[in-house]
Length: 341
Image (cartoon, rainbow, N blue to C red; front, side):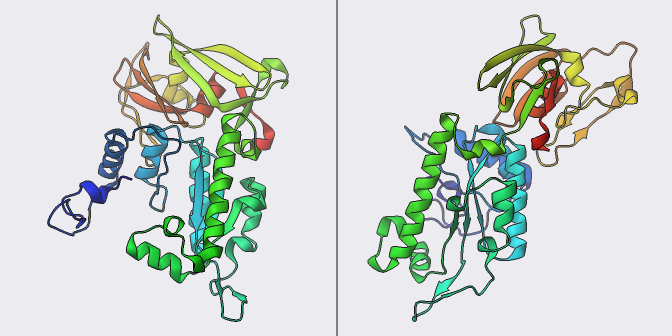
């Protein structure tokens, strides 16, 4: 177990320091701290590394998606419409970063009165109309959607720092049952994903190659990009259920495409040399300074994979741009399958 509270001198955690103040950090700093915690910790041998992330779609989430090859995500919400809307945005963000949502959990869904009846003080949430989005758009089965009750036992466990699944009080049998079922479902989906099976593949972005008459469907998430020895071209490998294919992309051609969508930039942009281009982790926008040159040369110098999202490419003019897997696949001649749109 690792937390910022264990290492921050102002967290108030015993042994970490004298104070007990808030950790106040801007987005970029929070991303750097997250990276340090992930890569500076000796985790030892792990079957699964579970990350409890703050709500939202900010720098922390973006950093983790780019620094780690996440196997999947679990969406957590409450029954209110506003919370469910935020959860939908989170699901969409992780999907755009190449991470499938394995399950959805709704906290404070209901409470059981002394007479044994279930009551929903905040509405039925994902147990009602909101489940349509999870089933039809996300592709989750009903068995992958969970509702946790308002529970005195869960609250007490949180206050005492003893997880309910570890303390396992006899009176919390219903809560423990949901936790156990959630754990088994996530573990099953991870095994299926590792072996290329399971319903989570419905969330995958698939492309076909124009010259193959749509015979093969290539999974964008499995794309591999390698910078060739001469330093001017890339080798792209795409994988399908029946095999794989290898293609080549010119470095200059990739530079002239949008790093997120893969579409060609406007003609007036192509005639200019983008002297300083970066892809912002929080907004996916390109910040450019343009200077006219007769013969622009965008020679790729270095390639680093950024999680399941894409690859970071450093060019000879000093620009560093993160290209999504989708943009690279389209630059290689791929076409998005219509059922992904």
